[in-house]
Image (cartoon, rainbow, N blue to C red):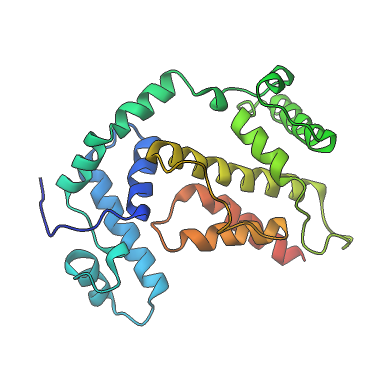
Length: 239
């Protein structure tokens, strides 16, 4: 395997490795490293536009620990060692075969173990579950339902404006809840403990979504958040 210069295994890189294997449990270490390089280059260019293309590539491939360590590429052996020691692939494959209880379909019966005490939040979750079921899509998961219940109390920006569409609110709520759920899953696998959302909580649903995206600009881009970015742009254009 390509050894390269030893690099720090930062949280952003850990998130990327886990997300890559979650998306494709058969993904090779070589492919993860190749894709990671592309994402690191993209992030560095976006956050430091003063650097030339050559300087960006040099920093990612050969840079010293000079404040850019989040962008320094890992060797294949470092990625492989982290994946093997922490049994990331094994845990994800096992979870896919036997989903955690939080990743099983939501139903009224699930309230026995995971109650939603607020009636308004429960009504919102029930409506989501019904719409998803009627739409022929995959069922609403317990984990997603709990985040929808927690986030539905956050208002939209300019709540009183006439052109706010209910469909936009529903889609935005689902996308933000999905992002929180995704982050929670990563933290469970990484053994970081309970998720602290203080870095991206906002006073409105749009602000919460923007904070979440801004938070991840420091790390390799995760494609699952692109729909949220597009939705926020759509809301701003119609505002």
